[in-house]
Image 1 (cartoon, rainbow, N blue to C red):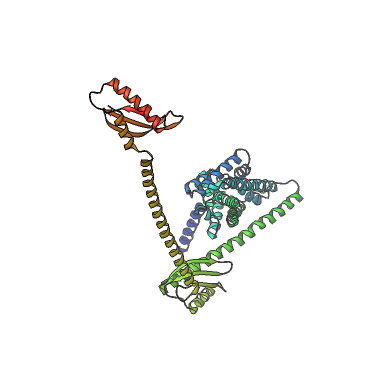
Image 2: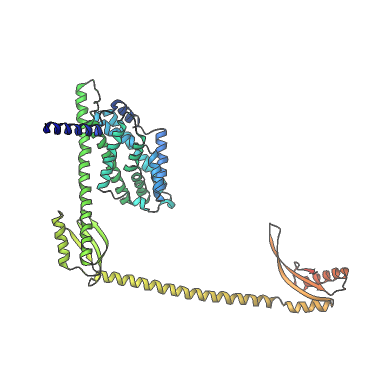
Length: 460
């Protein structure tokens, strides 16, 4: 009796799990195939949307604005040809594969060319963190691309399409930023940026296409029908070869990126362990997976040759032989001491230059002050105001005060400086006599000082 109950419980659980994870019952195969075929083409409005989204993404990368980059990815039509390649492999449709490859090439060339033009403008050539982040792929990018591709094709195969899922996959797989970064690398001649970005884009492309192929075959989408059986067999063979040509490099890329990430993680763990045990500070860690070379600088207690040999032995036990540790010590190491001396010398030189520049600036300030004083003295000597005022007083006894100033006048087409004398007369001197005396003095001053611009005015 208990056995029967256990069997029933297992059957119920199995049925419940199948209902949760089953994707075949809600699949619309014909509609999915047609939707993907319709989305393969990059022309007309789609081409312009692609260009505009590339420009937006390039601007976002240039300003390190994640929000702008995400916005560009939401409107980008990059997924269409890649899904078309995966579907064509899954249903043996050579015509669809040809169209998908052609439109994929158009998409890549158009995207890189657009970003190349944007980053060719000198003011947009700064190396930002968002650009750098798209040049160093690791195993997580493979997982994201594979999971994103699986999520996308599963969502597309439903009877009720999920646009939110498609948009989310577009953001997660990030096809557009690597293409923009590749254009940046071409525009600036930074080939490491171009190579890393193209590699990341290739990873995303291959694994999205591969995941589409896997789900299409899992759901048993119908193969493309061909009237000629010989042609069907030939196409099937071509498609199989092409599928293998994609899947094998995919596995190889995944393995390499996994090993690189694993190697970096193990080195990081080892260094953290050494820092805790030895009580030292480790800086500038540089890990090279291809050559198995690890470089870092040590501040504090020096590491012995035995310590370094133990590092190499620990890495060997973790599966990585012939690792080469290059350690820069802060004591007893000529290279480190030279580096410190170089930094100190540079610092002292800069300090000396600053002191020298400050002394020069002070000397210039003194010279400017002296020149200003000389200029004032020269102006006073060139224009003997007191002597002229005394002469004016001798010519007209009724004058009680004389003022002098230069007035600046403009008629908005030219500007001129006018010498102005103001004459104050004693009380009781009538207006008519003031006017006549003022005119006489003006003519006399113009003749004496040889300047027809001089104006003499009576003051109130």
